[in-house]
Length: 425
Image 1: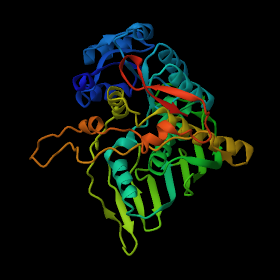
Image 2 (image 1 turned 120 degrees about the vertical axis):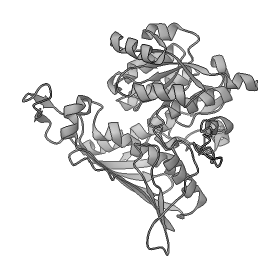
Image 3 (image 1 turned 180 degrees about the horizontal axis):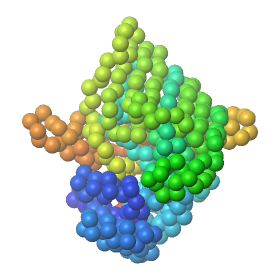
Image 4 (image 1 turned 45 degrees about the vertical axis):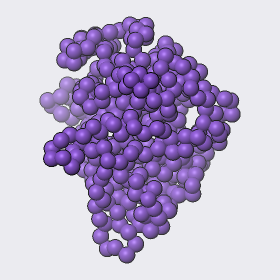
């Protein structure tokens, strides 16, 4: 049985755009549990190029769905395509891990989550940076009580998408806005650290939606284009445990290299780095201190580890447990953003309708560099040795989540779609 648990998970990648290289590289070099065997893209030439580069097979989506040896599919398509691509993959019986977000619309995300339950397959989603060394260190600090009881949080993000959209046109289109494309990292980080939210309110706007391409060396110079998404989003969060927080996502500024993610507690303040990355300095200011002190980190995955969530899900599949970067937190984070947008529209606070159990932290001590000179330790072992993916998996398996349907749902936790546990959601 243990040897079966160690068997790699045959995987395919859908979407061969800019983000695919780091996923394919990491799946090959960092995560032994993932065996990428194929890729596909709406642009056949892009899929063939990636297939040649990584020694895998160029496939169509239909071929991936029909290949019974492929268990997990990593979806890297544009957000506008997420719903349809994920829906088809889930219907074909594949476990799916997707780049953020699950879907553009909240109802679509909920539908995908229900479909995964119905078909007894996993559905996971980025951002997975909360599994990196910095945020896992932050989680350890919170759980240790070092800053006392968390009472508030602050997340500030500034970008210059007036310039950025000239080089990455996607960020001016639906789904590419500062809140849903980048703010989702901050929202997911806060939820992984502080748990679910019960109510949100806020404002959202698209400032100067009609613009003109202004770089002579870029295509379309002098031609008009439209910003189809939000470029300003501000919100207030009221967490279930009573803590409150503020978020500001602004792409009408400069490219600020010093974003802010801070958690305030009764005995101190926790300063975290940009959750768009996996590592970075973590500092704590405790009562009685004048300056914050850097905290030594004892978790792995400090470098760019895109695909970490997919690998953790694959280990969860083999070990028969709930994945950490699962669909429930992904739906909840998406709803929080949609709730801010709804509050901006209605001028009223928005009450959340979804819930989730906070993911269990990764075990410490699995570092890239160990105490033995330059010997590289196996960071991936942190994904394999731990037995559970939720903070209180027993409660999650036995209790009905507040605000969710009381129908008993099943979740595939074994190979070949076998059902090992029932979860009430």
